[in-house]
Image (cartoon, rainbow, N blue to C red; front, side, top):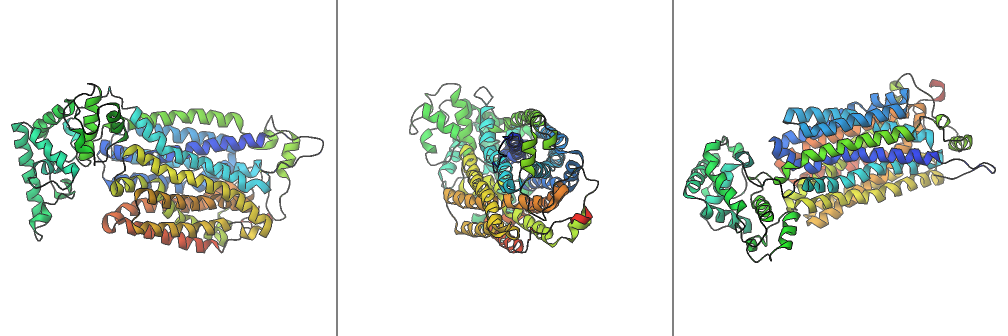
Length: 602
């Protein structure tokens, strides 16, 4: 933002405080929005959800968020940013905390819908606030600062979420299994009782478990394994038995098998708990080539070497280590101990909303003239430098300018761009952790770091994009306000195509970092465009393309698991690349010189 000052009166700098408070609100917005993505495995296991149900819960947020964009933007235009955004923060924080009380799919779906409604007005309100508090020549940079607040929240969400989940599951938490902790007992028994040569280190460890079971436990394991194999052979009756007996995971539920009774699995659970509680339950050398959680690595580092037994470890550490090792070799069959930590994380994040809402209420006023610490010189500075034809932010509005919005060709192209662009972007904050786990088998804490790196790189794109859009306007005029979006979309399409080359986990992380950079490069120019053409209706006008963008995100969240299941990850990446390329073409037609509501129609 420029620091133009009258000769004899140094303006106050309250505008920077307002931008900073809006930055903090955006930080919380994205932290709350995406914390579920990084706790999804534990939420899924705790609530007994399948991938489709999880996708519906993700999509529910974005559908509600999308449909409430214009109404919530109008409310902020009508009643002011200070009141409305404070209420929005309190509402979405309440429902983030309420996630910790969910007991099933329906309740989680409703809570995510409510959180989406609460968050919908955050960015339309923030954009309107920037248009009133920042000089025209600094709108792009100020918008990038606020938008980067969201990216900082999104970038720290995986680190904070995974770290807190682990910290809330201390060594004092019971490591014993109960029958509900056996997620797929039939498949577990099939792996333990399989008499063939183990195919990999994890299979060798699981086969060794069978030998440590009691006679009663071995009998129950054989019976459940035989039932599983017969069902699997029946499912693949036209294929050979080797395929039917393959260790490739096929869930018992997909074969139509009912969950065995607690009485049936009791001897298996009892024997597994004996192994977990026994300091010599596992030979650590067997796990040299098995991916394990970082906490397990820390416990191993504090004790004997990886090639020795586990018997010298302290009584408190051995059961936790054994439980984590068991989960590592049975990822589809044993509920994770960290399931016990995700609810507390939601309570902590929800409580943060009270602090942020209080800060925003104290710092922000709707207009510079209404702020007790903003002097007339700063108010005059903020109002200076607006080009001819760019509408000024006005007072409270009466209605949404729907007719003018529907007639605007440029605004429709922006809507189309955001719809397709979000199809490519939302993968980073929803399915990326799952991709890293399923394809590259990255452990939880490292997975959180690798999922965060692209969002961190996005911060650079956001700051560069804010500078670039103001620079382009200064050099070439308002017609090319959206040019950083065009560059970013084409760059993102190329990065998604690179993912088709089957990269390693770290190479994929680099590709996703380029995608995040390309997305965020265009965000400030998109915000500034809506401020340029919005006048007193910035909230409503920013909400309209945001609605379409989040409908694209919701569609993607439903389609992604289906596409991955039916066609594989490469098909999902190809879809994202095509979406980016087409959206970049669309932006070529956007002209920021044409206001949405002409002066004579305001």
